[in-house]
Length: 298
Image (tube, rainbow, N blue to C red; front, side, top):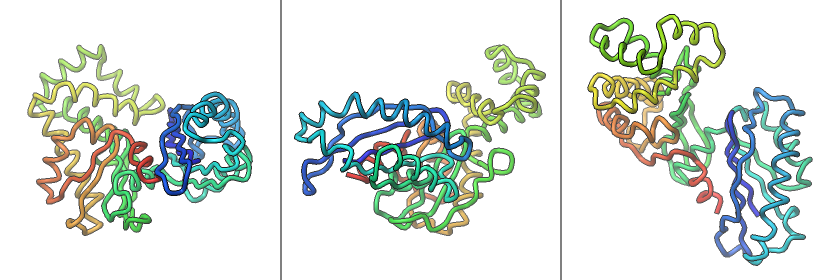
């Protein structure tokens, strides 16, 4: 029995795998969602509460009947369970806490906890060497040797870094529509469509929480207006800076660059163009790492 978790700030996706024999690939028994778990921002008691109320409930309700149908046995369910938890904020400092909490809840099972970047590397590259990247609200990347991450360019967040991300695209967009006369028509249309003023935007960016998410939300507008060459080029430039700042330090233009996340899946054409201009080859692109993690752990 294998239980895989892919967790972010909003939700955690869980997939339960089962194989009746060591010689047979695991099948998906059930999938479900719980609240997001981020140990870097949550206390042990908050995490324990989510696991107890939501995870245990899901494991108690769904898997048993499916396991019987697939040849499994209920009494062996918990004792044979192996857990792989991947999550945002699962740094080396916080991973031991997650291992302890999950182990205490499920018994003396094998529990391994890794970062969301490791999830992306395993999902995208499987057991092959490559460069794995996350492009969503934030951005990150690593050089992966087929077993472990061997190099990582620090992401530094949307103020100091995160090139290629949705939040940085939003920052570039806001800068362009208010400072570049070429974007005047886009500015007027955007403010009318979103019913905002310049003062509203300043308030949300500088005085309200989650400014990175607010900036990333402009991607919804940009994605709907990619027929405008100015906006399409803005996306390409954002991705080109990602390659220059984050991927060039690996000095491995011989390797494919793989991506997971909403920015990569939404702007595939612009991402491919940016890679071409910077001398890189695009590999796999996934919306979410779960599909790749299932294949990796099967």
